[in-house]
Length: 502
Ligand SMILES: [Zn+2]
Image 1 (cartoon, rainbow, N blue to C red):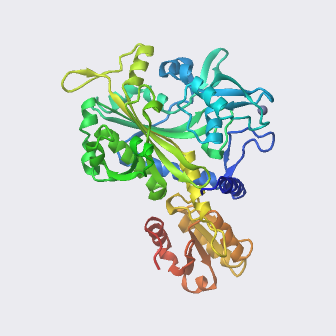
Image 2 (tube, rainbow, N blue to C red; image 1 turned 30 degrees about the vertical axis):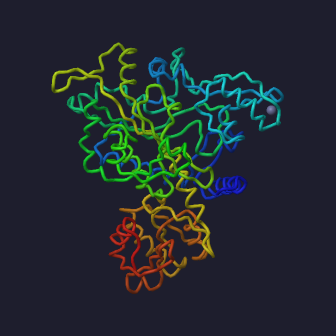
Image 3 (cartoon, protein in one colour; image 1 turned 90 degrees about the horizontal axis):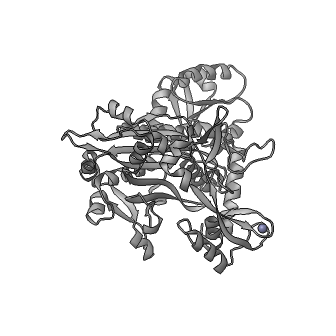
């Protein structure tokens, strides 16, 4: 969607739809005074979020990663060591007229289209002045003194111990490093991940689920030696896989991303090492596995001046949304030895391990960092965009992340059909999330299920009582077949994985 107005209209319609169809409620608490940046996953949305998480979990575990879960509330020293306490903040400007405070870089982006998240305070102030950026609430001028707003949410443990709700899962995943060394018997690489809540006290969060104060992250770490980065065992089998790379150079020349094999990307020095290239490919496969279409994904290389000071290489996976355009959904970062070195220093413990050669090293870390909320939102954004068939509203969600797999509908509420349907439900319950619905016309019940993306509906009718067959209807094509009740589970499993066949 090129037009800004169209895009804004779409954002409003999408948010309304997601609330009405029980995907996302909020901002919460809706019952009292809503607070920006907090949303509920509703009665349908939560089921879908679980599906997305499980699909991601499966890709990680299939690739040898082990999941852990660390506490959310963490003492101050952890964030002193990680650098967050000193540097995790947003630049804020205050309106001289209405005293409203706003995030300086976002304001510039919104009003001028200039990407400003890597700008220094001086540059931010100068841009606001030169480009006449004004207050979105009252059109007033800004006080040009940039303030730094800390992003971590502070809390207290017991009566007086300062702590923080973690601003990311990643740092907390590093902390049990010595335990991992034991589990993996000291043999690098160690591959671990964590899915869990993180918090950012953003000054004025907007953009629905994309910018929340409480959100869910999924972050994976590969601890490895410098030698393994160059020669990564798993690279060989993936070297011909292609990624849509949008290099810094292509960005400057206004060229499109190019599908590039991992091997070529290394040869051309777009990517620095095998392990990093493999990690990007894994991230790409995660997004494909949950059903984001290829043509909506690209990898954007960070500009030299936006990379974190410790980052050796940094690319973001971006998804093109209808509501908000190209949106960062995952970062792959080569963090070298930064984190373990910091935590060794602050904990005064030895976080090195001994290699087979006898040499002691602090491992490097490659991190695949993303959230659950953004890909979740992307899936709904893309499905909602295509929702209107000529006669009906249908959410064509990928079958593997559809919140409910099967609708089960007795044709009428009499003649023993509901009782027969309940009998069939018991069979289906062993494998699927079934939505049982007896009330209203069959047409209304179908459209209700289409609107939340249920891929298959089963109708129990009078013929079922005679010959033990039911009607199975596919959501997108509306095609119907009759299936033996005894073969229903097998057929559905197959269709959910491989698609519908008549
Ligand atoms: Zn103002």
